[in-house]
Length: 148
Image (cartoon, rainbow, N blue to C red; front, side):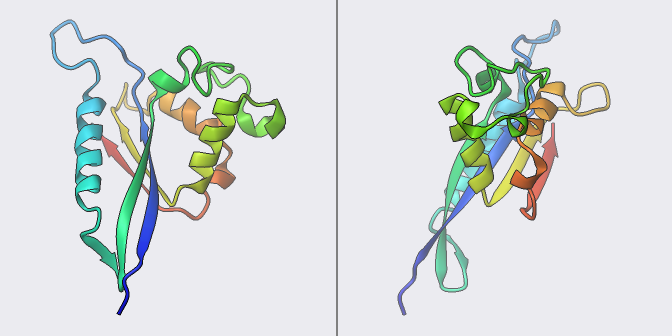
């Protein structure tokens, strides 16, 4: 019996774009700590998880709003306010980094969202990052949400 390997492509969306610590102290972004735990837990399962006779390897890509909206980021051309969603534009009109991120999201097998709750709603940065890429990219794929 020959075992083959399945690569499960997982995109982890970070929900916080906060970059300062609260006045009372603590982490700048608690989602960094939670995301590191999630990545470590998933990675520790490489080769030990199986599906039938196949072993599962996890390929993880983290989408961080501080990076994608930052200088040179995949969505820096649009800004966090979703002025120019990618699905409104022709692919050849998008920057190369945006096309690459769009492919990562489109090719993912599943999605995890690690996010704080801001004022009883989802953070604007999370909504904007995911909103740039039309719903067809997420269609019929499992996802989960972890609020911290």
